[in-house]
Length: 143
Image (cartoon, rainbow, N blue to C red; front, side, top):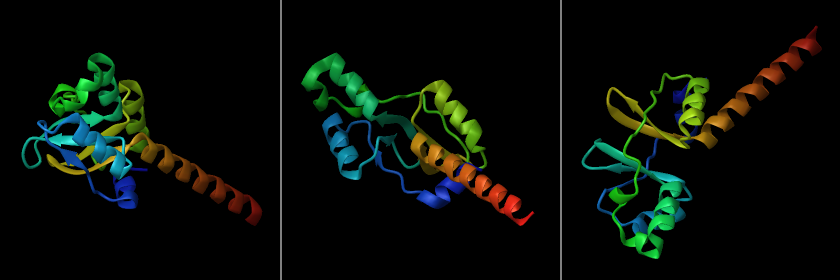
């Protein structure tokens, strides 16, 4: 299965924020949207970071409640790793596991086209395995 299949199923909507937004503003967006991360853009299609729930928790542990007034740029992950729609889900899962990422932006020709989570990847793998099991059962039953 490919990343583009995941995007077709879940959609390509991506929630974004700006580097100068406060952590509190973005935490409220995460809660309202029921998501675990946002992409940080400094202009159209110029991704400068990712801010996840983990990043916010680390900042809170370091700076206490005052952290919530800090700009996103103080807590975001700046080393953004991307995947492509034609990437294999197994390869993406390996990258996410090895690098300990729960979210990966998807780019085609330098343009952002979506964001996938480890939950999306696991869900797609489970569906793929179920389809294989069902096909084997049908094959055995027909024989």
